[in-house]
Image 1 (cartoon, rainbow, N blue to C red):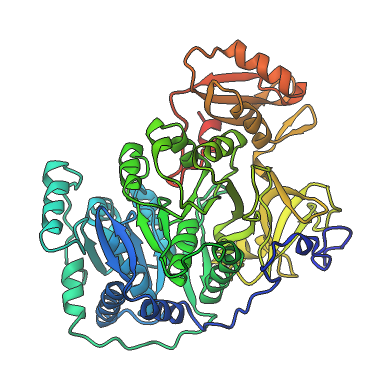
Image 2: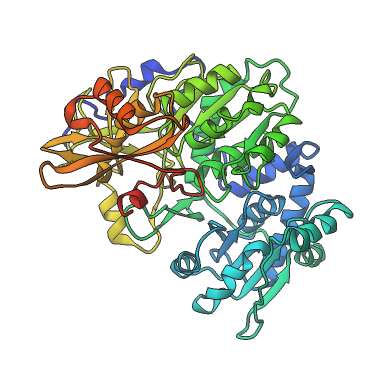
Length: 571
């Protein structure tokens, strides 16, 4: 067992820093399953809008009816309790229905990035053993290439216009297919026992069927949430109903005191869902927490279209804005964004990657709402820590452990580190996954015997219980025996007024073993390499300074907006 000598879970120094009204523990027994939570919320908020996408709204009552019909249809196709059903869509209304329907049918949701290559898609479908997939037609051509390598027998094809009103839906589908030519030709053969059905036809058929409510408990699997594969082959984090339920209730407990300060509690809150629903951050923070609290999810199918995104925001007063640093940064650097009305914006919560000080300061200046940074992983459903919501400015911390959560900072031998000493951030709580799907060895390597999950991130905890992340273990750069953490270099460089984005990686160096290489996207085209080198000389000690600087037009990013250092290393 790990030794305790400083940041042991028993001390829990973070509790003395909790904001008023936030309890140390949550009651994980409020619901037996996510379906119980969804059923309650759909009834309670039936007349409220659950989501809006491309001008069309879907009420909770409508979501309830559609999800019941689709769940009954899935069962009618022989999908038993525990069957894996993949969902491969961007943020569109059918996704809202699909998640609830798969869970109601007693099946397991396998969220799939719609921009996957055929190789990536084949791996996830085969690894999960998915028997069915609900896919937006825009991405069905990728499925066509690999479906014969998988166990998928039921294919449900959704369209952008599904769930739009009677005239808008067909018009939108025509525009997408023929005018914008966004739907490639595809042909999914129905031999080999495979069935291909249109989403709206499945809903029609499902309305004539009776849903058989499966017996679901807290230890049943709800989601296989695949990791980004940054440390190797992508693995499915097995999230039980109780894991996701716990994280919803933990997040609600943290948010509620701040939201209760708002006057009219009857008015529904609007949460911006620009992060993809297939990612754990949006899945929990937008869909699940939003449903629990009766919010309206403002679905953004393509957040990279910044002008279109701003057009959508222009017609709404939003209350909660989750995003990653790159999205905050892209919006804050668009002049039109600063002219929007932020008078009702209550919470801007950042996660997924380190929020940079320059971005946070710019966001605060424009919106008047500070970015509250949190931290988590797919394996923790995802939220493990978050800053107090009453902070007034960027503090560089990822915050405090959320209720019912313990953080330990451990060395490579599993010993708890004293306050102020760096080590691996390890997490224990009801939101921690059951393990990696069908990978007992990987699970054993990721978990300590006492239930703490090894995050792979290096951090430090101060005496108030706040945690500061330094970097991932594998991203550390060793320069002449000194540890250099890329996040620190990036935070400093991003403060330069001529820099839009940057990333630091380690490269081989004959003299020092490794050296720091910096990749930069310019804000000011007049910025020269010598200017940046001089700035780094002023801001960082010698071994931390970039030895090489390369300017790029853009940096490679994942579909969630994380900068992909591994691609820069291999370039």
